[in-house]
Image (cartoon, rainbow, N blue to C red):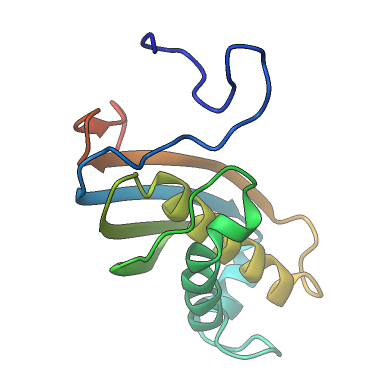
Length: 162
């Protein structure tokens, strides 16, 4: 297989799940992030835990963790992984922005990038679901892999990673 080649297609272009059977197991860690923009009043509701549906960030944290655990069920060619840990953090940036960051860890034969990205996505969607009654103009954006290490491809860090 050449560098840059799409691994989820065979020589005839058919979809395939990558065979990781012969790969050595190693510690794998991935960190992803995303951003949500909303009105200052909506962000204040979240921070003050005054949303009608309850503590938005704790529900979103739990949903993100659950989403990471189900990544193999959601993304067709992802391997189902036994995750060792998933953590999700939230940081208010200014009066209108919420940053979500997720880290996923495992000791296995394939990486956890998709699990970290899924955790961020599901957490963001959960925040939206819980506040959409007061702010339908919320924007979810910039979901990206920030860093990953472990495995054959080694360490990756987005040049603009924070």
